[in-house]
Length: 125
Image (cartoon, rainbow, N blue to C red; front, side):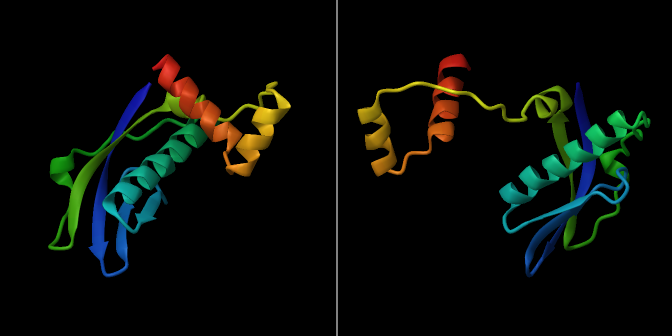
């Protein structure tokens, strides 16, 4: 289930922060716009997941045309797929590899979980 809510981005000397007018007490920060949008999406997901778990109804999104903006603020839309967000929780997996390969990977500082995730994404998407 996809959700799209408007956010107001604030540009100040320390970076960026965003607020969601429709999602009470939901805001986010970031030193870059990319980081801000990523963090804003996560904040929105947490709000929506919490509301759904508590059986609360979600507010109707305000039209982006109705958002108040100034010289240092501007509107954007943030989208999330709650089904993906719910299922993005990590699960523990056990694997078996040859000892020599394990030793070599440890010497090179390879993160096994990250490598496995990247390989699985490449093979499955």
